Image 1 (cartoon, one colour):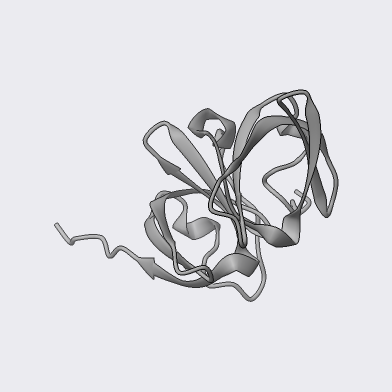
Image 2: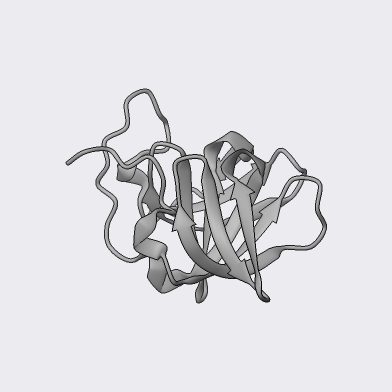
Length: 137
């Protein structure tokens, strides 16, 4: 199976998304219209918005959009497909933190679920990750 570069790709076209970007207090909300390697095009309130991936801290989607199992094999990574289902707390370069269950992995992004929300975090925006240890039975 080829390695996916991004979790947010053309398969999510037509889906609702909220994106938190560097330097902005408010999230950008819209419907995914077009997806490119370095940009995501949204439709929001009768206007088009192009969000550059390098500015994204995290994106919130429906948890069902992170369906399926990630079996990507990543070289030279600690967080890999063997950790699917593990609880993570990701500390972002903005000082914020996001926690949830690891559900998807791609070359450049991690996908966590938290309740009925899915959160996609670009690896470039993660300062460090705290991994919940499983209690031994």
